[in-house]
Amino acid sequence: MSRYAYAVPAVADYVYDGDTFAAYVSIAPDVDISVRVRLINIDTPEIHGKCEYEIMRAKMARARLMELIPAGTVIDLQNIKDDKYLGRIDANVILPDGRNVGQVLINEKLGRPYGGGKRAGWCE
Image 1 (tube, rainbow, N blue to C red):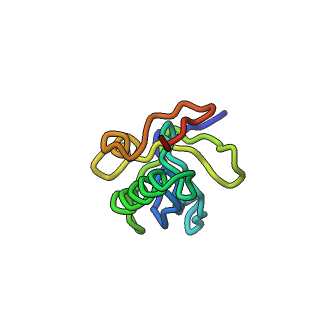
Image 2: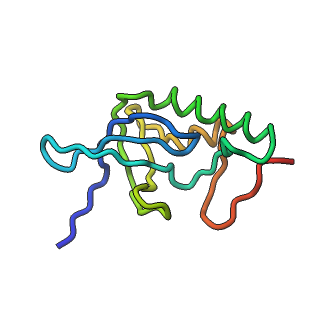
C-alpha cells in the first residue's frame, strides 16, 4: 500500500539561486536530511547567465527568494517529484501564510512559468 502526504514540512536552509534552495526534512523522529529543492513550474534567470541583464535579474530573484524563505523558515513542500539532477527534488513550496513561492516570483516578474523542455533565454 502506498501512502502519499499532501504536504511535507521542511525547514529552509540556504538559497542557491532564484529557484533552488536547500532544506531540512524530517524522515523519522530525530532524523533530518538535507535536500536541494527546485521550485516546480518556474524558471528564473541563471546566476552564470549569458548577459549582464540575465545575471542582474538572477541576483534579484535569489535575493527575493532569500527574503521569502530565510534560513529557519518552516515551509511545506507539495507535489514532490524527482529532479533530473541526483540529490535534488522538484516541489511547490508553500509559505506559512499559504502563498506559493513560485507564484510570488512569477507575479513579481522575477521568474516565468516553466513546464519542461528547452527554456527560453533571458538575454535580448
